[in-house]
Length: 420
Image (cartoon, rainbow, N blue to C red; front, top):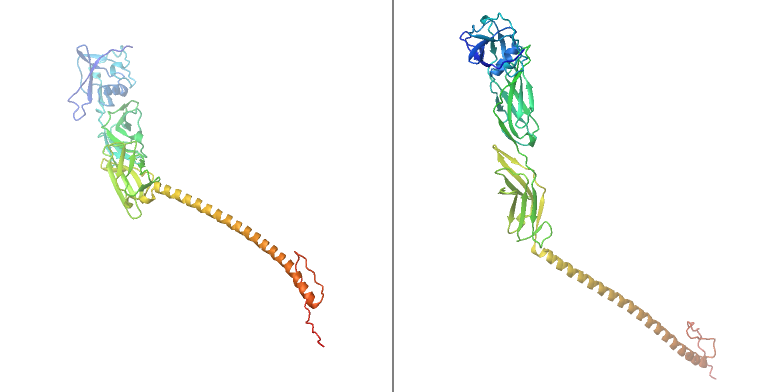
């Protein structure tokens, strides 16, 4: 066996009226002379290789016996034996010593499925810009469903298909759904279909890729925030009439995005908005009033593809408005003065208690001294009274000892003097 490199030309014939352009007698050009192919051993595998080489899909039929008319010139190929996977008919093994009696009555021909049409990828979802967790739907369609085996959905940059959908008989359209989208799904998508040769051919041929559709998956991160308050006020507080700033920040931005600062109060919600020209945007308040008091939230929002995407709210930031007299400096002064007063009162109380104790001690001492003096006076007076009474009334048992408790004086009835 040997292989010869030949140019191939498919000669069309008027005998095949209404057929596609991919049908006719096979002729080969060697040097400057055209010749035909003998139909000895000519089958669908050989025809598949030829149809693919000419861009005519796969073979519908391997035609024999000069069905498309007799050719002229040499018969260049006799008994080719293709496997169906060769890139060209000239790459197929062949038998040089084929049937020497082969004539132009045995010219081979072919009916191919036709040129591989470009499929159309359509978006079934209303938008091409979506949020994480959403789904997107496509359809892939080809006008002719001849020999269709399956459809594939591809994402640019990935060699293997994301989705494969087999088709039934005469089916020419399929749908693809990508659910629970992630940021990794963002990109450009296309589809193609494959056709399969008629048995015993096992050839598989892929169509050109379809048009592309770009999908954007918008992932908005939760903004961060911080603030600059009056230095005289405690954390989270602003002195009335002073200024304060709140800065919103996000790591990921989209063109045309903006920051929104929401103030949530018990009776209403106030919204402030600034374009997100930079990753961080500062909202300034020059004259803090009670109307500025409440919980502040940062959001990032952007409009894409006719949709508005809003991030989650940041953590709440509480801002309290304080009266100037309650500034930290005044509070510090008041605390110092109160400490001094408490200390002074404590000292005064200690002094008063000490004085009271001292006075009680002095009173006890004076009382004891008075009692002592009283006892001494009685020790002097009682004997004198006893002497007087004795001289007048006569003796009676009576004793007095100093520093002892005086016994009660006994009662004596009056003495009557008998005057004679």
